[in-house]
Image 1 (tube, helix red, strand yellow):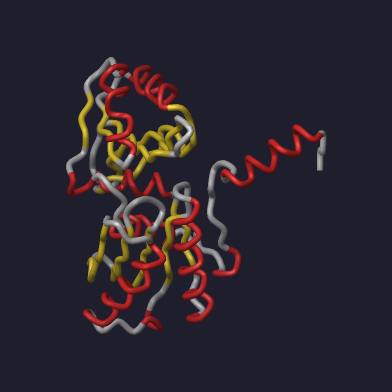
Image 2: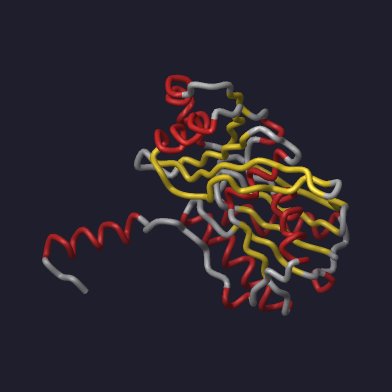
Length: 243
């Protein structure tokens, strides 16, 4: 089975091709360019380097959210366009789940943190449990958009050592150091951001379970309203318009 994986949910743009248990190619970049400038050229470069025939793909995996509204739209549009053109199914992977998968086999708590602005984080809690000779991702708390204090309180209640990762770490590091009561650490640069390879690996289990969708049906999961939607709602509230 061959999967193309795309992640543009955060600061990182990442593209990977996986075939069965092999990572054939991965291109990940976090620099000053926008995802609209990088994602398709990255895919083109990978396709050229590994002589990829896109028609041989079995599915296209994409970070389904939460994350940057613009980044998710770019990833969604790219995946949907490819899926419809190639007649291939899509596999939408929760962004925070895929980030946790970077730390495969870790039996400590895993807490991905993405800066969601407005003093909130996109986050969740995970760990890995060993079953039938392999580690499986276990969701302790599903991905959510909450104030940092809320997720740290949940971690303190668990009483387990935790590893933090994600672009929210530098943003919230001071608060983490002030509020954490137990043992904690921060993931190193090799695995502390979104990676399409991790997303694609998790997508294989989705594919085996039949958790796929038609390209035209895929929609990002933003978890909360965009700034424009919030402003419209506030204006309607002030004007007394309930529609």
